[in-house]
Structures are given as C-alpha cells and as structure tokens.
Length: 396
Image 1: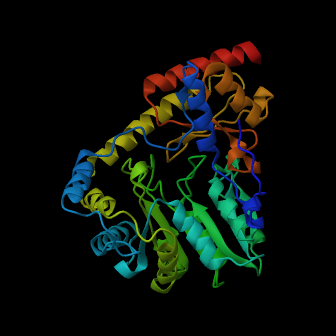
Image 2 (image 1 turned 90 degrees about the vertical axis):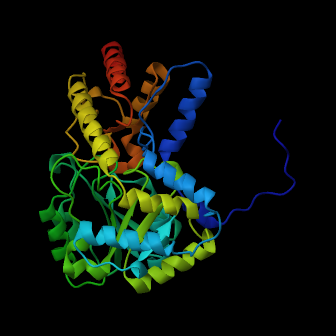
Image 3 (image 1 turned 120 degrees about the horizontal axis):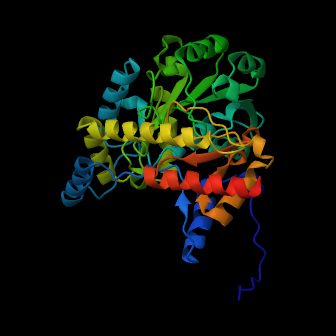
C-alpha cells in the first residue's frame, strides 16, 4: 500500500514547466510488456545497437587500472579538450583552442547550460519542431518563450529560412539548429545554413548548433554554421560520443564556444556535476584519435537498414516515408491511415509489439507522423514491417 504522507509535497512552480523525453517512457512501457511475456521489437530509443569499439573500451579499462578514477577539472581533462579542439578545427575548418571546449556528461547538459546561461524570462528562443523535446522543455523551464519553426516534409524537413526571418524579433536571443536532425533524419544543405547566417546578419543572436549526428550522414558532406567566419563567435557547437561511437552509457558530450562563454558554462558544471568521469574522458581521447573504421561500418549499416525499412514502409497501406539523409531514424507520414499519431503508436505497441514513438513526442508539428529508430537488426526491422503490414490490413 502507498505510504501516507503527513506533509504535502510543495514543488517549485518551475517544475510544472518541465517536460520529458517520451522515448524513455515508451521504453519502460515496452519492457513492462516484455516482463508479461510479450515479444517487443524496440524501435523507440535513440541508441546505436552496436558495442562501443574495442579500442575505446580498452582505453577506458586501462584508464581505470591506472587510477583515472578521481576528480578532474570541471571543463574536462586538458588532453581531451586539446583532442576535441584539434578534431573540431579539422572537421569544421576553424581554429579552436582548448579554452573554448567544455566536456560534459552527455549532450543534454550543453542544451540545458546554454539556455540557463543566456535566456532570461520572456527572452525568445527559436527551435525546430518537430524536434528534440528537451529544447522546448528547457526553454519553458527557465521562463523563456519557445518559438517553434515548423520543419515540413515537402522541404525534406529542412527549415524554411524565410519563415525563420519572419520569426526573429528584438527579443530573440537564441536559435537552435539540429542537423542531421532528430526525429526526421533531415539534413540542412549548406545553402540553407549560409542563408540562416545571412538572415541573422549582425544581430547579437547566438546559435546553438546541435551536431550530435554529424558523423552519421548518408549522402553529401556535413556543414556547420560554425564554419562561417561571421558566425564563429556567435555559435555554440554541441557534439559528443554517444551516437558516433556507440557510447551512450559512457555519458560524454561537449560544447565548443567562445572562451568567455565557456567559463560560465564551466561554472554550471562545477555547481551541478563537478566534472565528467575521468576514465570515460581517457576513452574519449582514444575514440577521436584512434581507428575510425567502426564509425564508417556503423554508418554504412544504418544506411543499408534505412534503404530496406523505408522501402518497406512505403508498401504499407496508409504509410509514406521520405528517405532520411542522416542519423538513424525514419519519420513516416501516417495521415492516410486516418489515425492520430499517439493512438497509432500505442496500438502498434500494445497489439503487435512494435515500440515506436508518436510524432507528437517531438512537438505539435509532429502530428501525422511516427518515429522509428533503425538501430536494430535488419532481421528485426523486417519483422517489424511484417507486423505493421498485418496490423494495417486488419485495422484500416
């Protein structure tokens, strides 16, 4: 029986503004169904189904044995910050120093810390919708005004720069970009990135460029707004190790930004986490400096799965799906089924054991879509297609 509490829990008002990440809620529900004996195909969680590369694991184990188990600097170990600076300098064609790098436990702290540092009440933040739900959650949490820019399927889920221009006001403090994009797999072409910079012009607006999927690109080359000289000091780059190196449980990401801002982000690290685990940082050095063939193999396999899964979805009654160009998600349009996104996602989970996400888990403009992660075996993905096809034949 639940324990009776004598005193009412009195939460701060800001807690009512805090959202969540539905993927973890659906994962918990799916696992509960598994405990009841049901067979579930997991296409809900944004996590590579590959092991962390062996050389990275060995570097972490070696670091543990050598005593890298103590506090480190809040901004990150000097060797890792230098390694990240070198990597970003090389891949974004800019000069980055270690003083501009802050290492954090995962990618989310950079989102949270950026918004905490820059946004006062009623300041406006433009963010992609559908988009990673933590953007909107954090904006609301600090009392900012969340201004969504709709990503449309007919634009291949790249934002309309003219719409962006119309949304910018005197209260706009931050614009969030995400390419390759979660949940759609859309990629902003270089011309759109350059046009975003032109629209911002000389305004004192910061861009948070979430590039966590930058190495998981199936066509073309990744281009960062940080690479544009006019945007260099107004860009915060978010990247990390979770997706690229299948290191989700290691909890390690980083932000790259002007040094004076980095010092404030570091103070938030000191006040919240103290530091990122030292042995994981040593593994991170090996990840960036060592053999990259595992990244290439993983990306190639995701592309193979993408091709098969999208082709299969497009044969299912009521489903249509564009070909995503990056990340490891597909975002099929389900409007022709006649179902709303959330009821359809629930039905597929409960009736045929397919754990996916409603498009509305990523914002109001996600209605009419589902998100499936292709971070599962080709065999399981084919089985998922068969189950969805059977369900639609019986229910549509």
